[in-house]
Length: 462
Image (cartoon, rainbow, N blue to C red; front, side, top):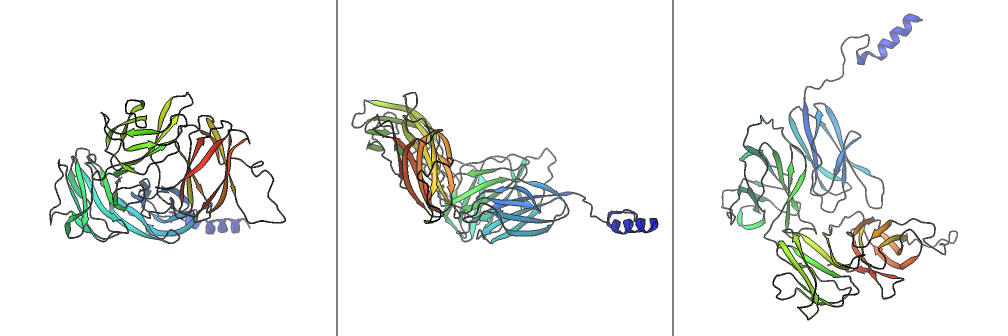
């Protein structure tokens, strides 16, 4: 019996080398680099996993962190929350036999529920430490565009126009050019229609990759946060990170909200000395459209309507090229006139709706927001007399003058209530909100003439 047990143990463990000599498991001899890029403009973040371990979450127009893995075999998985789901679904898997010193980029495209995965392969650059160049690969991940030509030229003022035959390469969707070295310095990226250097789709501001760095410069579809028709992201393949390249040929825009009940009608100027107001006679609760403004230092001056000499606020803001900025005129808790600045996220997500809400009520410097989903009547379970009595706020302690809170919501109808922070004392509501997946709604909590209540107003999208 004793000899039998020893023989059984050796048989069971032979693959581990017990009783049989050398291990049969593969042994790593090096590492490869791995990342994922999300090119679906209406998608939520994908989870990128190696086997069952999360590498990172990948938002649209970004790459995950660059990770190193032993040169072994792996299944890389992709998961996402589909419409109406609070948990993630595995929607794609790719098997890769990682080779040492190779670089792998998984490109997610197509439909969210069944995405296509394209694999780019390259070499990991081994920098010796004294190079004066950077390495760049240019890629096309804009599903709405046909073939494109890409130009990368030293920065000049004014920029050098693209010249026929001078493109770095021509790309179809999903393609990436081989790596090429460029002398360190500032560069301008230009994207045109393939074979037509006169049809410029994008021209970046100067950007300066660091020497001894490998980068991927990828063209994406513009979304609602972009003013240019094309978006471009620079991905640092050496140390990780994403940065957006800006096309400054498109001026930024500003939207102005009047949320101070005490100030009366106002005129708004963006020049010094004052000239012509960009918004005239704006009333309390008034909201302007998107107004084109110059990039850089922006002198904001609010005056009493029709009286340039009665200055209410005179402040300076910095506005970035290609950006969309919202300015809220409020009265702070200290009773001072103030401007709240925000860069709204207008990109729709096809799997859920989103509400952006800001508190501008001086009478109620912190509030809670309750969302009661409307469901079909059920005779066996009638709704409570007080629908918020036994529920918690989805947004708690929303402060006066803070940036708008962004809340993802499932498709459906909701009643919104605003209460005094930490209590069930209703200040506003119920306000009905009907949402479809992909909707983006904006709401503002205003002061009411009666200081004991507030007003919750849904603002039309621009």
